[in-house]
Length: 229
Image (cartoon, one colour):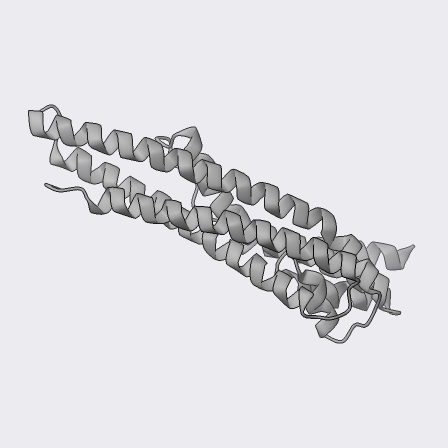
């Protein structure tokens, strides 16, 4: 009983530490719902990776290590560094040997969530870019007619650049997930069906990242084309 309490306490400390180190800036009061969602996705890719990775690493350690408490600590630390999708593989590389099917079971639901979140993040990026293009064009017309100032236009461009920075963070996080998946695929310990599933999820993440990167370029074109600021 005391051993279970110690394991739970250790994991709680690891998860709390991971969450604390990934706290970002809060959304401004003037953000649209789409912009808030985009910033939340940007922040969550860092927090989610550390926290979910630590949790998966601890579970892996519990399954694979004879010393359960030590297994949780080592797995959580390694998994937190790796991120949610492939925390198990890093835990294994740290010297813990175990069942490949256990690895797969721990990560399957997480991969489904990763793809769903990537799709939602891309949609938020598309919505933000569309709104930004319309608003900047309107402000340009208003500046030309004297209804708005150049300062207002410059502020909106700056706002759009913040949104683009959030998109870049998400894209970077997606690439890390893709790379971690590839590391798992290259591990050579999974069955053919498991490898097929992981490759399918990897391909879906790659497709979402490409959409996001295209949107980032589109938004850069919108802000870069602004004149008179």
